[in-house]
Length: 294
Image 1 (cartoon, rainbow, N blue to C red):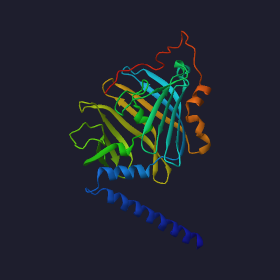
Image 2 (cartoon, rainbow, N blue to C red; image 1 turned 60 degrees about the vertical axis):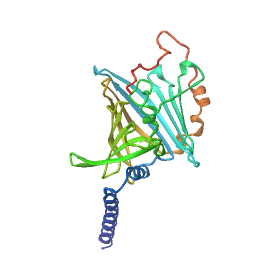
Image 3 (spheres, helix red, strand yellow; image 1 turned 180 degrees about the vertical axis):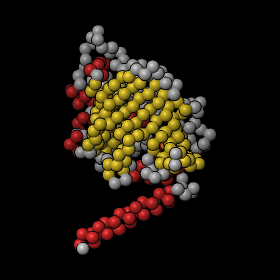
Image 4 (spheres, one colour; image 1 turned 135 degrees about the horizontal axis):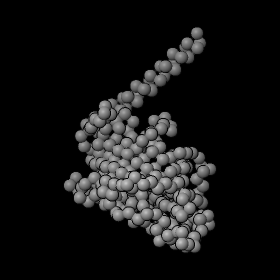
């Protein structure tokens, strides 16, 4: 009898939670909900954990089907004052070991992005990437694609909702916040699933308002209640017919895996010192060069 009562209570609790979630989703399907409100809810539901460590593979495929595989570790850390620290560190192959992207976002929103190339000695090269600008070291991702979009830096304009293969989407056009007219240059278009408020597809536009890259998120996994993460992110370069796929094989949410000292130039210099040039290593470009698409 007690077991039956517990089962009924558990079923009732699950039903109430489901109804609450359904009411929340229904509220967001209102045509009066703005693009900014939708993005705020997207950020709230899937916001970043304070401490994240990931092991990733990056697979690059050119127009002829040739593949190039790299392995990397990704670290991110959010401080109590709101400072966000990010490090993407390559481990494989040997010629790119130690190459790193280091980024820091201050509480006021100011972001500094640097690239470390051991072949160039103890110096950080500042990145001037503006989001839809140069791709990051031979991949089809920009620095902003890898470090994340800052809501306060952008303006979101809601378009008509769409339904594809019975999945309903919010559609938001993204502009720089300093622009006040929808006639200004569109940066990208987000397609957000209405059932989970996750951005599963993004079209990136060039200066001529043509789709230059298509970013899609796959293999979504629930990591905490309604919070999701994509284990695969694909970026397709429409101009060069080139693709970059990021696959996350391991993800750990732990303070111990992201100590503060690794987000410094000194730590990189000590652990990945200058590499003397050899005939086997092209120190001028540890990655294949690509044309800028936008």
